[in-house]
Length: 463
Image (cartoon, rainbow, N blue to C red):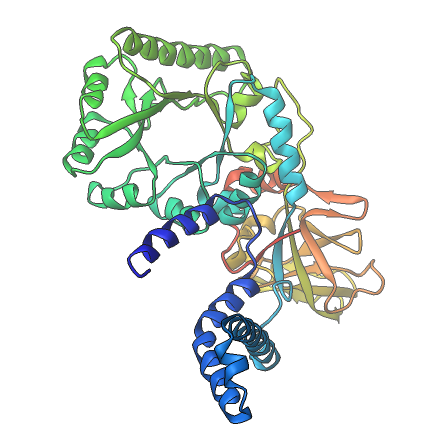
């Protein structure tokens, strides 16, 4: 039995990892407690049977003994969990100060919309780097995995490991560089590594560990990758015995623009990539799965016959800016940013507000303190523009400079605003909506940066 136990447990845990069921922390805790408590329950049943003179019935009958031990173990575990929940120290609720709401329905909707734009043979690779653009990578990947997504892209080794440790299956491609001395971790967590040069491939190969890789081709962006006409370097990677080429890809640097120059440049990138791939195939190399498009590539060049399309910002229902694209699917914003009112106060005319007295009241004014600031990712240069939040479905202008942990809004025109009310900084409240594209553009940045910089102390609540 003891020799067979490790083998049996290995396959049982493998089956659990393949199941699509929900994970419940309470069930995991109960299971652990049953395992710990059941030997003591055996002792307790035997002792009780001896004291009651019922040893023959309760212990001699193995089926009865088994049933009693199971019942007592389960009851003890439930009681222990109840006592822990009853007396454990309280902790603040996730929505006590400021938080991010992530809509599962919107995420699944966007996945369906983007899939409809792609050829049937092309699968979607979800880009969940930078904590899924601030949305929470583990939670987002879990929703997408249940919706049928089987490939994910991250930027770093630690991001890939985090997905695996939380049960994310399928291919996980690391787009950034991983030190060769961490090759063992790539293998252990079944991660695919992007290779951007022949030298890097040789160093990975010398680590002596079999690895899955994707080769990145530089077709004109000149950031990362092997030049598309450097066939000697490309062929050298295929000669690395311990590296298995699972795919090849490139990155389109001007696919977000529809002017004639950008279109010509993008078509040139696509042509150079296809040319390199066909040349390698002609020499008998297995190039694996191909992927060219990112979000704008999907929206502006949807018909490319590739194996993957890497969906990033569009998957989250946004674009980098208020851009025009050839295809305009009905994408739904996934993220809403909300915070509570901390205090409400009146000030008189001519009073300064916030740091540096940048704002002076022209008359009596009612101010609300919103519990969120630049430490949470709100751009400090929001103040010079006409920034506002939504309170009770109405606009409340931001006044003064953004502070580290809070900001001030003018609620003189609003009735009934009180501490504890919820303000919306991104998202919908009633008939009003604040789009992250508008916030980003008014701050002189792009949506990707705005969202990915939302602070770690903001809980991500999936709704």
